[in-house]
Length: 625
Image: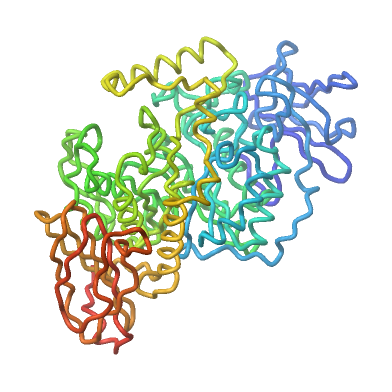
């Protein structure tokens, strides 16, 4: 692989000093050329080492539409296209990303351990479904207390309705959202509001429609099979070109779009047995860029392997990712809240496993998994709390239900408050899914807008087959129907109504507590104790930092339960009670008490107490986990 220049993109069409440079990776082609429209002309490229073809010319200008012609035959959109202004099959548009004038020179990325993440889908977050409309909601997100948004994938996909995981141009920003300029403008606005931007990227597969990569070269390998077919080629013949393609892509988002963090989708589906894993190689190049710009960049992953190698530093044999999603916390919490133990939920017994996740992050870290029929997972004892991201719902866990029900449609108002609290008092990074903070009732369904009828029908049948055992719940919503997409949009008008307004204020209070209380803000996995009463379905989470203690009392049962507050040399003072009438609850816990005491905890409720600052030796036991 050629050396990657961290300062600039080399692939596709780039501009410098009035000249256009075209660079295409097509290692098995006999000839490569650029075909321009208006005026129509063909410009041949010259072969270079390692399968690249290149041209420097003054005949291509920003805004020109073009395709890449292979072997003097068929022409295709550029695999490294920055813009697809029409669709995934039409010409690419040459664009100079450096023309955007940034105003975020004073921006400093939020420290990772302080991230409060809000996941959103651009197309359904607002009625308009654009970056510009999202920008109008930034003050709302600041009011909520969010300091980082996570945007579901924006790589160009077919049509205007898609979750984003069917993207086929990883460098191009979805045209219906506002394209590259719209994303740059949004990120600049976020930074001026003090909000970091996490971008969800897909490096484990490509979408099916508009996928012309195999025409250019061996982007895929039959060595491995994934849920989407042949794996992306990270370790087979000609894999150097594929590796460079994705390394440059990661660098582009940080350098040219000022993105603060990448969330890499399902990295367990990346197949790579190279001596250096592609994730580690990306990490190394991002570190170089970070040293050059002075700005910190974070790499987060989704992984269901319970393998800390992904988030361990390279000097210990890890890949160097800084954080990962923890689905197992979600699964344990959902079963505790009443979710039926079927499918992957069958591995989770509820509150005991929730307590284990509070302590150990992974629930399965060396035990036999009945769902997987094997011993599963490794312990993550050396990893800090900020390396784990937890949630009570996200796009996957909502949208992959047959009817796309949010938590608001599955549990009571009181349980929703308890689940939100369970996430926000954890020693991990919390993630909220758009609309949960006001108990949005609309579903988040699976939707597509492919233009190929056979593919649309295949997706329809695939969804029906996936949920064949759930036919008693109704018909599977048609993923292609515009109605399915429209039903998934947030209803912002509900914010002015109760109980939605009350839920929003409750989330505000929880987020403010997390920021204000050192024992909640500091994500130490050592300064934590969990006590469970399984028969009562109660959990007591105690955390401490320096001379402050916080105790979080949770009752997941439908009856009042007597719960003991741990003894303390300093008085306990109540910070929040989810059952308080101000949150439309049925009763309140004592405001303050000394030493240890017992309270009657309301059904499906959370109470948080703190101590008056005490001497460090009185702040609780220290363990070296």
